[in-house]
Image 1 (cartoon, rainbow, N blue to C red):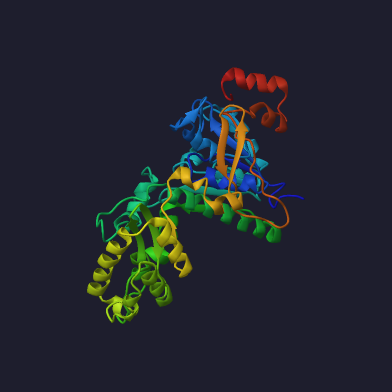
Image 2 (tube, rainbow, N blue to C red):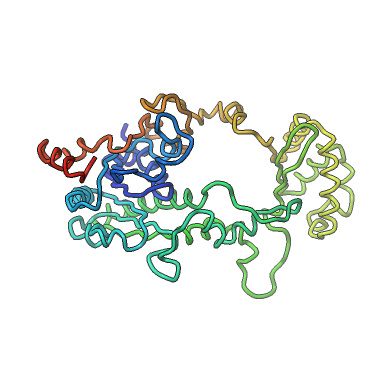
Amino acid sequence: MTKPLEGVRVVDLSQITSGPFGTMVLAEQGADVVKVESTTIGDLARRAPISRNGMSSFVLNQNRGKRSIAVDLEHEAARAVTLDLMAGADVVVQNFRPGVMEQLGLGYDDVCARNAGVIYVSISGFGPDGPYADRPALDPVIQALAGVVHRQQSEAIPLPDLVRNIFVDKATSLTMAQSVCAALYRRTRTGQGDHIVLPMLDVGLYFFWPDGMMDMTFIGGGVAGGPRIVDLYRITHCADGQLVYYIATEAQRHGLFRAVGHPEWSEDPRFGTTAALLDDGNRAELGGLLDAAFAALPLADVLARLHEGSVPAAPVLEPEQVFEDPQVVHNGTLHTWDHPVAGRVRQPRHPVRFASSPTPVPEQVPGLGEHTDEILAELGRTDADIAALRESGAVA
């Protein structure tokens, strides 16, 4: 059985996460992904902390199934090699600042002149032009501009905070992978390539908007009010741990009241209906009563009662506890394997399960330039050519 993207060649010049995480998805779904890195430090993610034997976990977690060629784009010969790679690719992905690839002679127009069917992806922080185009962009900066930081707070701790993982970068990468598949499908029907322009700022707003900006959607008056979805999120302390629960219906709220030993609250006109809890005072009063009730109960007991009442709830697990969670174990979500340099590693499988073909974890993450000679040979370079390129420092 073949994987969905088998036969697709991807040339990946991206670094860190906004490109590499998505190109790993393409590799796991069968694409041949060639990672083009600098001869000096490679992908900047290779310098991230938490490593073993020189292999960073950050690189391991975003580059499974790829091959690596190391080139110095300051050399004309290296640029020629890279352009040859692009000329034979189905997909090219880059996340340099706007204008850099064009200066190197590796922009969309340069590649399209030799490969009209190419799907060329340009990822940037803010877009190819505009007042912020030349600014460096990192995930927390995009979070701030998209309104995420301001809204990352609870009533108990009314201070804004960051989402403490690079979710905009990862959302950008997954959006890129989906758009590449859409463009490849269009090419099968029309024969035409495409240039996909993907600003992280736009992705951040698009990803955050459905629930995070639900109260900003309507323009003008006549809007019925009420709490946002995020206002209903709850993290609470029990006698011996923390849990998260979410109440979406009145039936679930009554199940919550039974779980904490106060079924009478279902008949209380202040708390028993959704309409009553639109009142900020009622909602705040109930919050205090619930906090006190939870604090007196053992975590395991109250979780069991919440589940009996069909209330969505889960314990707040520490990272080590995640590995032992019964559903994670049942799903086979995590995979362990032996990297020849990094040793024994643990990683999640790709979450998509195709009925037509398996999606195993590729047990391979390349070292910097590990496949340089192999890829150069595929481009028709002779042993003498490769030796000369290495001698000049154009490749490594």
